[in-house]
Length: 136
Image 1: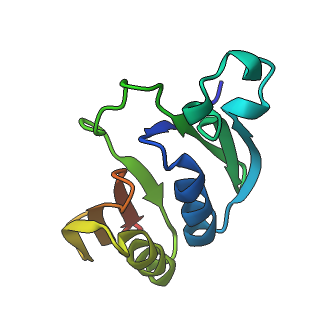
Image 2 (image 1 turned 135 degrees about the vertical axis):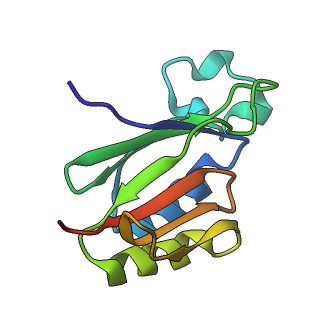
């Protein structure tokens, strides 16, 4: 079994996944617009560019997402996508990249459990935690 985050966006899924690919060194392996789907004929003209499914590989992990159906988007709450690093410098680099245009809720810093830990909400509204644990 794999457990993979699936994010929903308010019409900016394509831009978000391009941003995440750049920040995380990921590779977008699928991105389908509603107007390209087998159901394209039933898609209203204003929704044809909406992303119905995106999938990005980051190493051997997947991040997936889509644009929410019309009228169904809700601001993400009650979760964070967590990134764990072995290297503090890489944790700091990714934190800085993801926070560009976003909101830092806790600056990346040393904590009692981590060499580096920080929390942010990126420019697309996705909440992230970046963690580089101390080794015992």
